[in-house]
Image (cartoon, rainbow, N blue to C red; front, top):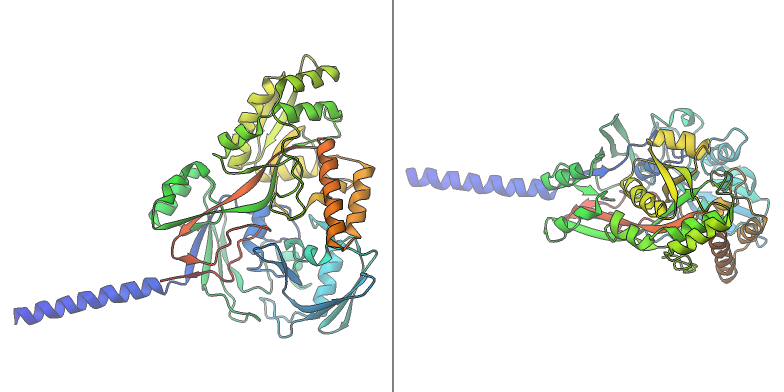
Length: 495
């Protein structure tokens, strides 16, 4: 009798073990760690990358989308045709698409979204993307005609940005707190300061997401990020904030460490409109005074690529200017003397709440002190940075990664926070915007990169690496970041 009972207990134990293993294999939720909490959840009304990193391709969709390789793919537009003169685009929309509130998506929503983005009262952070549009018309319920003022070679790419997602007139004004898109996930709840949870959209028009739930856990501290992964409280950090801790994961079979590329040009952004930075000799002195390789080694623990202009090294049109301003403090001092600043000067360096900015700020301050420039380091939160630096232009220097894709054209904007105004550069960008031929575009992009380097508009430091760490059983997270996104549409757990 005892033997039978023992066998029966053993069988039950084995069954329970198998059931547990099966349950683990069938897991359909994920917890992702993110460094920053977004200010809100409307990608059409904010510049913060943290917004798109949660909403892009998950909650909101555009007519086109950018894939992991940086290529343009169809999204809400299943196809399109472009006239021979490059001025007229006809988009054929998918039918049967619904917003999360159950309302239908059709051509009128496209007209509303694009007119809103380019309108006089637009608060879109990338409003300039839509300036070439002359008109948007609904030809029928599922066909949209867009006409341009001039040929714009990057228009399909521009329509794939998070700033160009489709919204509905009924919900557009409340998308900051209650985002209503057409994507495969919809908002479940937002616990301020803690997490943002998404759930699978059961009425999604396309291929359903494999996950039922995704939670973005806000983990602001680097040490806490390590602890959260080790304890299993967080399954993945698409961008792990502490590169110095990566070796602890590399030899642990429970994790994957995936080093990819980003569109993040990390720059010492310079206010070209205030003294003494309106003097090109001073800006060049800054460039020579910073030991950028030591900056990568010290602030980023070796992860990052030197750059010499506002352009990603992985792009086929990249021009390597990374060694034009190699570290030369004596040359920096000579330029400052030539500018009448042989006794140095003081300036304010505003540092947003990212580890790369705060760590880089300390190293840059040390480098500049050696040539007589005293920096006041001012730590600010994102709301302050966006309000005072980005919008108010009340700053001397700041450190920031511009993670928008192919964004060299921002230097041609009249009221951009760099305060760089150069007609020669503007002409290059205007010609680029009107050119579709790949070879011609590459040559113009080379000219644009060289002009920014020649003018030392900003301190071009390094291209931010994408340092991902996640559970080894997770499949489908992006290795690279050609756009600000944590696209969860193909993410799943593997046995």
